[in-house]
Length: 133
Image (tube, rainbow, N blue to C red; front, side, top):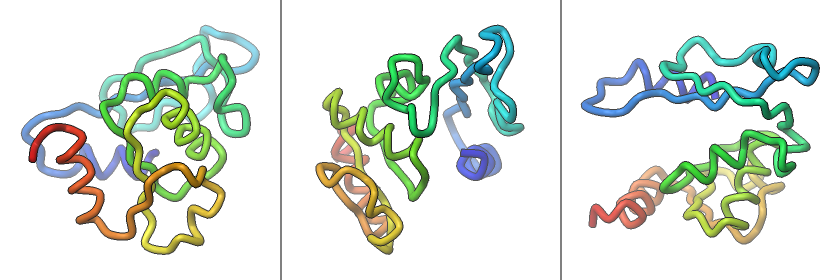
């Protein structure tokens, strides 16, 4: 997420803000999890939710907020937390696409999620989901 946040905040833009949904530490809900928010987040939203990664679909995971507050989701190759966000998107009926030029990078992702091998496919998906066609 740091790479995505960096790329977004450093690219020329007309609109938008880099938002980070921040999990808390396991020990203290008033303390952010170590490493959060990344330095490129412009608007951190602190939560009392400590779960992530392998526990990304837990009711105590910030991933529910990430998914439910999105109009559409683009998943890049990632770990257990990204996989759980795709699972939640499918569960909640949110439009989701998994982008990877090499399918081997996303073999662990749910098969029910649409795949894209090109940026053009991702752009077409977003235009359709956001009503820009």
